[in-house]
Length: 500
Image (cartoon, rainbow, N blue to C red; front, top):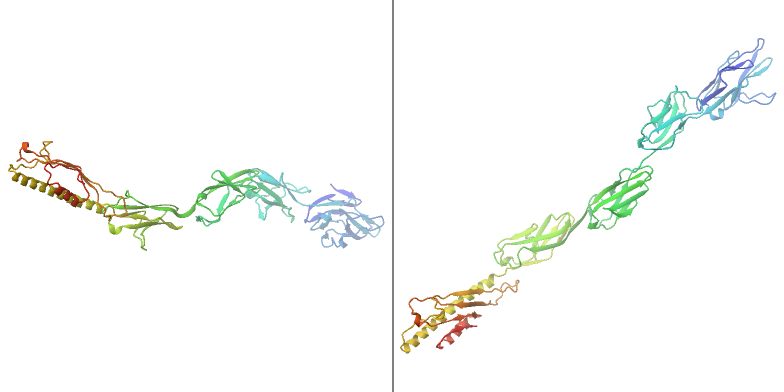
C-alpha cells in the first residue's frame, strides 16, 4: 500500500530487518514544474520548527553504511547496510528546491531484530520428541531457506522447524539457526538430553594381580545426566561402602569375592560387578606318611605334602634334613624298598608364583626287623635246650632201670591222655614295639610255650607208659632253661611245670 506524503511515496511504512542485514527503502517523489531541486537527503529525527533535521549522509554513524540510490527528479530510494539495533528509527526523505522545503512524513519505520531458537523446554528425556523453531520479530516467511547448526556442525535441514522425533544423548548441544542470504545467526540454544545412569564401569587400581597385603582401589564410573549423586558398594549382598572410590588397605585372602557398585540419579539406577582374586603364598604346609607309623625294612613308603594357597602350588620339593639338594619332587614322594640307610627327618617345600613355605619335619625310621630276627634266634635256642633236656632225662632213667635190674621201659610223655603224639601248640612270639625310633634295641622278647603233648612211639607198650607233662614253659634266657632241666634229673617222678 502506497502512502503519499505531499508529493512523496514510500513502498512500505514499516520494515523489519535482521541484525547485520541490508535494508533498502524504496521511495519516489514529484514536485511542480518551475521548481529546481537544490538538495536531497534522509533524516531519522525531527526537530523544532525552523530547525533543519540532521542529514544522515553527514552523520558518522551512518556515513559509511548509507547509500542514496535515487536522483534529483523522481527516485528517492536509499540503502542501509549492516543494520544494528541502534538503527531502529523512523526515517524521512527531505528535499529542498529553490522555492521551498519538503519532508515526507510520516516516514518509514525500521525495526532491527535478532533470530531466536525456541523449544518447549531446555531439558528433554532421552527417547522423547523435541521441536526447535527459528523465530524473530520479523515476519519470516515459510519460503525462506533456513540453516541449522549444532555446535559447529551444519545440519541437513532447511525448514523453519527442526524436529527430532526420538532424541538421543548425541543430540544434546548448542543449536543455532540462520536465514539463507543473511549473515545473521541466532544465539545458541542449549538442548539438554537427560537420562538415567548407564551400566557402571569398575576399574581396579592394580595391574590385575592382587597379592595379599596390597592396597587396592576400586573406582566406579557411570555416564548419566544429571550426574550420579549416589554410589553404593556391596560385597556379595553386604553393604561395604559409598562414594565412587572404594579403598581396601592391606587386602587379605578373605577379601576375595564379587563386588557390586550401584549408581543412582533422579531418573533411575544401574549396577555392575567385579571379582577380586587375592593371591597368597602357600600356608599350613604339612607332610604326612602313608603307613601307620611302623615301617619295616623293605616296605614302600609314600610321603604326601598338603597346603593351602592361591594360585595352587605348582612345585613340591622334598628334602632330607641336613641336605641342601632335594631328594624328590611332586605332591607325593614315594620310596620303594625302604632300608635303615634312608632313615632320617624329611620335609617338603610348597611353592606357587607368589611365594613358598616349608613343612615341619617328619621322621622315617625302620622298625621290626631286628626284633623279629631276635625272636627267631631265641625260639631256636629254647627248642634246642628243650631237646637236650628230654635226652638227658631219658638217659638217666635208663641207667637207673639198669641198676635195679628192671626191664628198660621207653619214656612216654603223656600217660594220662593216652595219645600217641607230642604236639606243640600256641607257640607265639610277642613283639613289643615300644620305641619306634630305636630299631636296634637289645631287649629280648618274651617267648611262651604252652600245652606240650607227646608223640606216639609204636614200639612201647601202653602199660609201661610214664607221663611227662610240660605246661606253660616260659623262658627268658636259654641257659637258665638248660640248668633247670639238669637239676631235676634226680627226681624219680618227673613232672615239669612252669619253668621260668
